[in-house]
Amino acid sequence: MRLNHIILAILISLILSIHLAKADDLQDKQEPYKAAAQRVIDKCWAISQEDRDSGVTERMRYGTWDTARCLRDHILFLSETILFEGNQDKQTEVKENLENIINGYGKLYWALGNENNACKTSCGTIEHITHNYVISHALGEILHDFYRKIDRYKADFPPIDTIKQEVKITP
Image 1: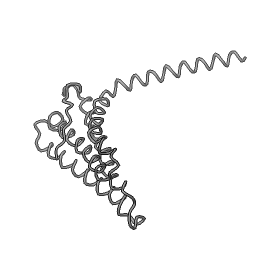
Image 2: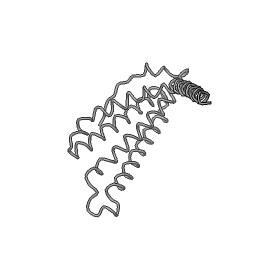
Image 3: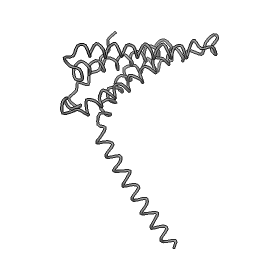
Image 4: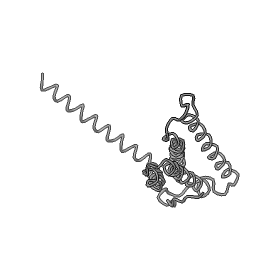
């Protein structure tokens, strides 16, 4: 009887591990855009690493803002050169919507961190950075979505690996 339980446990473990391996393989095949998007996100965070690690609130704040601008610029690059190439109206709309998202998130998280009733004098200097950090993460999610669309319709768009991965910052 005990041997039957051991054999059953081994069989269940094998079946489960095969199922999980197939699920991981399927996910990797379905979502190759994630690696391309993550490369850009990592580059954008890397450009501000020194400032974010400085321990100086102002430098940390501008560092996280540099990351947000880098992500925004790459989203606009994808909009102008691939997703909405030749469609100036849509490119303008994307740019305006990104600015609305940045301003909306920024103002909301600035107020939440620095202007709420619980912080009569100050909630601390970390709250002077949080809004840019939240903006950067939101833009990272949008960037993932742009790459997902590019990958999903790859018959109409160049493969992700041929997309220019240059990361540049504009003021």
